[in-house]
Length: 159
Image (cartoon, rainbow, N blue to C red; front, side, top):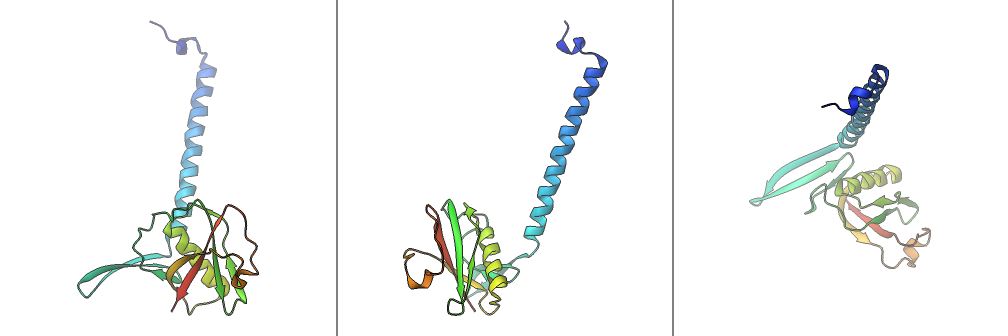
């Protein structure tokens, strides 16, 4: 029984093997780059377990921000397109995140950290809550241009 591989010349066979090897090397390079980016992203992450009044708590720290919500780090917020806002010092400094698609709580922590760094509000570093912006016409949000079909959440940061 013969196969179609028997009809290939040696040059064609070598060309196919080199193409496959190059493709595999490219995929390995892409995976290495993704792992490098993930390592950089996770480097500031610190998770601490502690007990208080016979209850276990998990506190998650990401560089300048901490939170102790009931959600896993890789759960999603549940909205597809989201932009986060943080207003600091009587609305003089405003942080507006880039549009995030289905962000995880890790992504939320990273954006909250950016908000703290950009506004230089190192006093309020505890992510207490996320408040969905319902009344976009409120005077509080007058300096923000809202886009259609995007949910907006405001970071609630405290000491």
